[in-house]
Length: 327
Ligand code: MEV
Image 1 (cartoon, rainbow, N blue to C red):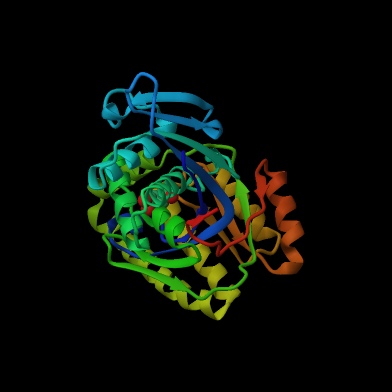
Image 2 (cartoon, rainbow, N blue to C red):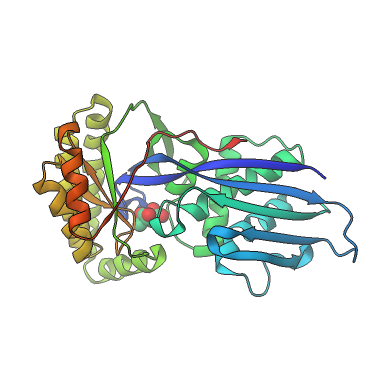
């Protein structure tokens, strides 16, 4: 029996969410909290039926089993969907004939919106490639993982997959157009969790409804967000925090206009701004999950306190984490 363990980072959207789904750029950073996936091959199984077994304690899934021939078919438990479909897609491309046991361990809650499913899926593909001695480039891992996202949810830019594969901080354009690593050092970011789990696909659909009703208005919002991202990219690389903070605030205004902010998110954002943050915005799909605030060092303690005062939870993160790797 061979056992391979791989890890990949979670992600935080910095600027550009929603517009990125429609071909505009975004900025994303990989966070220090990682997802770990261990895979072993099981050559001889007593019944001779080759099976997949998945244990994902973070999703409260223990002993999920299926015959290999049935993966991707029938009922698929939500907490393992990305792993199961990733295995199916890998096996279709690189056939193998053994059973597998897969175990995940996460350093962050799947509630935060840090992209635990994408990170687990990327780890699964990398671990399978290692297990079967198939050399896959980062681009090939990205392609297979992004195909898996589209197979499952039909929508999504793949920015979270790019962060898990490449790590660092990226300027990303969907449709295989651009994954550009940026040279960025420490980012003085504070993250606040709203306590509400958001469903990305639901929020993408809500915005799509708005776009159907007001096509030119929403298209213009996307264009403005794209412009913000392009200027923010320069501010980020130059470490012009004042400008980056202002751009985050403007981006938040457009996200409010798209209807994806919530009272809780806005309360955290305003609390951070009034305690001296350069800027603050929601991060990700909206509807819940997290906000990010960029803050001068001397105000970080006050900003964190402000998040807690309005009922948010502060999550300490490191940015620019390494992409998928063998453990
Ligand atoms: C969700 O974290 C960010 C969205 O832009 C969706 C996506 O890019 O896949 C709303």
